[in-house]
Length: 287
Image (cartoon, rainbow, N blue to C red; front, side, top):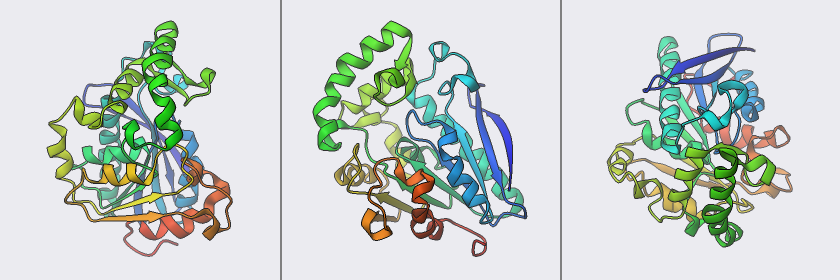
């Protein structure tokens, strides 16, 4: 297994940074992993390396402005949440080109916010999608605890903190991680509205409706952020996609907990073998 650092231009000329994890031989498939909100691409490196060892070429990437070591000071970023969806779109196109070059299928693995981005990929031609703990961001369908305190976050904490330092300092506040100000402001508006991103961009519903990619939506009852209702509510936006909704029960896999992001941690790699690998598109059985 080897790695390859890359960058590719977004539609507006900004660069999106990524890293490939490559198998030793010709890949049997290509996988792109789309990050959750405020989650660095390095968080997905263990899964990416694991998949590469099984014959898949895997792209991880980072939304513009999300990691200062890659993009410079976060307070200088002009990125919005909508820009991040378009970053996912160009990352998918980059992965599609690699898949086409070797004649293998492309799978999209989207974590939370990254799973939502499938709606922007109608023109890319993704062969399979696995959404992991991905539902609507609307607070009305969130887990009960989030439903209670999120108005305080979106209406008071986030605006004040962002105005004070020029970006949302989630790491300091211990609520999410650091996020560019434009992303946090727009995402907050969406999360307070039942139509989420369609509240500002109703025209995108037609684009989402074009998606025919088969989707597996993985969820767990111990998710601290979203609820099963949130996932079902979001999946209505893909009326022409074949959808498989699968609950991951921690005890069924010898685990005590999974949570919103635990699926991607190496201590829960049993889930990768049992829940993910069989649902990825490959040209031949993975090694």
